Image 1 (tube, rainbow over the protein chains, first blue to last red):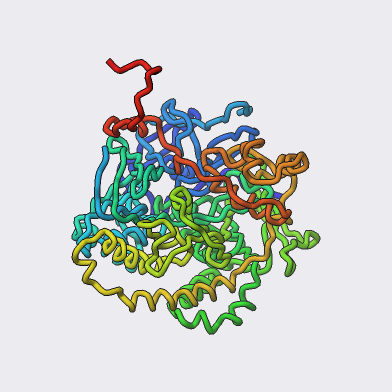
Image 2 (cartoon, each protein chain N blue to C red):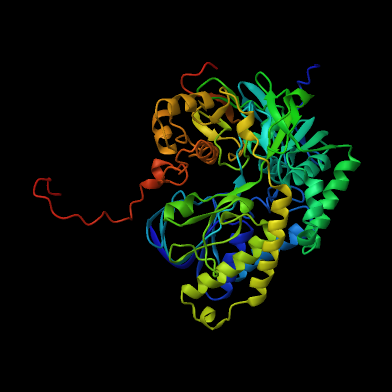
Length: 105
Length: 477
């Protein structure tokens, strides 16, 4: 089975009209975001779907997209367990995959 | 702080917006609370106002309806509070709100719960992999953030919303390999044609989706289900198989499809946590979302003074939500004793239209009624409680040790005790226990109804409770 890695989400209708893009860091890597986007949306557009590691070590990402499931938890500027789908991206934000206690990253 | 008002509405989706506007129109002071930053709920989800064509739905009918609802709020002087989370009913007719510096309590003569619905969470092997997204989640990404997930994608599960999600993906330019629907829809649709003909707009919409999908070359696989999702750190492929009349997959006829995104939809379930916290009685209506709220003709729940409207009470879709919102808003204003509402007669046309939609709802639900597959699909390794990583094998072991109820299992495994507070796991556990002849009752809902911060509890204005003097306690200086 051929690997289909490396694809990423798409910003619909292009990037025009969303304002001035900025960068945030995700696990040390620069990711483009636009004003008003959630962290989850910016990461998805960049192809980053693995957002956290659960207590049994299983990889997790966005699931419900409406702030109820708490699967999309990331660490934002040092604050743990922030929902990526409900947190607005801001310039210079430092976002990291959150790793549950006891799990290997 | 403690505030008083006539009507408090919880939820600013179609039903809540409708209820708030209607109550205000009948002279009530209304506070509308919603935990999102923008009004509209899931149905009217739209991009940020600062974006080009932002702040509204791209469809003309969506723009018109949302704009009209928001205009009614302004015209009625509704006090709309975004990012306000209702987390408890500390006393009858009182809501506890977490709202930053405005946290506190709201006392209302009448309350309308319009908390909406969420995707039914149905476990299957690999469902926790990044890349497996609920249909509601993908709709929110596309409608709210204008971001499409990576393709190729597969849309699988059960229910009419699969068509909506698939059509959204196709319109967004994502290659959709197939729509995998568990029910044998074409055959059943013929049977229910009489009921469906009562709402030609809905039937026309469904036909439109089908045409769009066929034109995009999307395979429509009825009577099939996803057996497993595979991948190491992310989703890489899914296995699908046909299901028999009893809902069992024919594993020998499996097919493996490489996908990056799996959109799952198993219908919607009302978000009943607040109503449960208030003590409202539920009823079983498998065709309307499973557990629904028991309500009288005025949409009042079994708790005096608390009404419920829209998908948050029973799944009915946006047309029903808008009408129920109006009815609940009118009745709430009447109960609050505003002079105008006392004189207004009940709107019979509203009630009749709702009744007509009831028959259509039942028809649609019968077309898509699922075969019970998921218990046949899961293995011991399948995670059932996503937040606390409780697997089926853990549940089996505890049942083997004598656990007989969801509450007992919760105590010994932490099932349902994670951040989602059981929203994605307790219903499935209840079904599993019922199938085993064990006690399917859910554990009691306790406050807070949503995770909140300690800071939200530290509101200075709430007076301490009146306690009898205790000679053994040190006296305050």
